[in-house]
Length: 411
Image 1 (cartoon, rainbow, N blue to C red):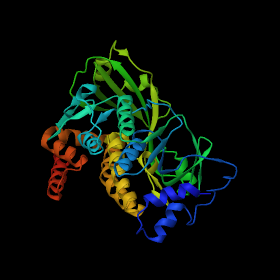
Image 2: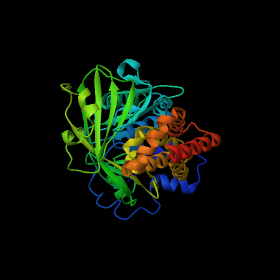
Image 3: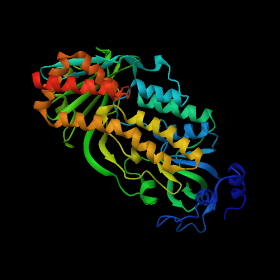
Image 4: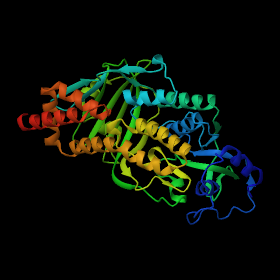
């Protein structure tokens, strides 16, 4: 069944690779139940070292990182680019750093810089600037195009409009053909079929909220990303290039309409009054969920397929980019267990920040005290932004915790 493709892999594998690694590569170790059934009669397609299932930002980042390690990489996705998604479209400074580490450079004129984050509720406004770099408001479709172009330029084979319909003990069924692969990466979202087919099961979901996104043709009134806190919902506003603003409304109520949610934010509604809606409205679920394991055999998960944090952190894309780099290192070493450890470490800080911010969403009295405290101590908000970006020492964290505690007692 492997024939010439086995020779291809053997040529690329290190001659000194241990036998158990070679056996994992060929899929001869215990395959999860249901994999490899029904392969008979399928036509053979081309072989690849790394098959990425899902061509969104997480999948393309994984493909680029693997290709930069020298792997032959194929990406398969049932959609056609550009692939859009309802998201806040604000790239935090450390997310832009992750893009640069992948070799993806975004021109400043393709987006709009923002200098920090501003929180607003019915009575308080507080803001903090990033200490070192800027963030960038960038349309999701432009980001996807940049990643796809970078992947193609570095030699990734991109198979759009091509569905993956199952896994085999030696690869996957792609476009009706059996494609042999040394490694399979599931980047196919929250409801990952790759996770299910490989025996990794469903997420351990802890919370879910419902997001709706619109773009407005309006001159941005701020160079901050603004987060409005309401009784039943939140609004995120990101300035974009071309006199556009991205507005995302998030609620725990799946039935709440965009107009109903916007009524909670009179200041924002006034800023958008008579502004032209410049895109179709899109919706998505934003969830806090995780997995005990993000790999099995030669299958690994990345992005939302491997777990996600609520959109309030602004961390989704940054997480995916760091995971992609860690996964490529693990594949190069032939040990996905190292990716499991790195994945946990990468997710620890965003999970902490998400739990904290979601607590403020649920507990209005506490949120009001926290916002007043941040307004009274602007430097504290800046320290918390550093924490969200992972740029803190233990001493800085201790200082921020003490200052926040004092503000909660006195605000």
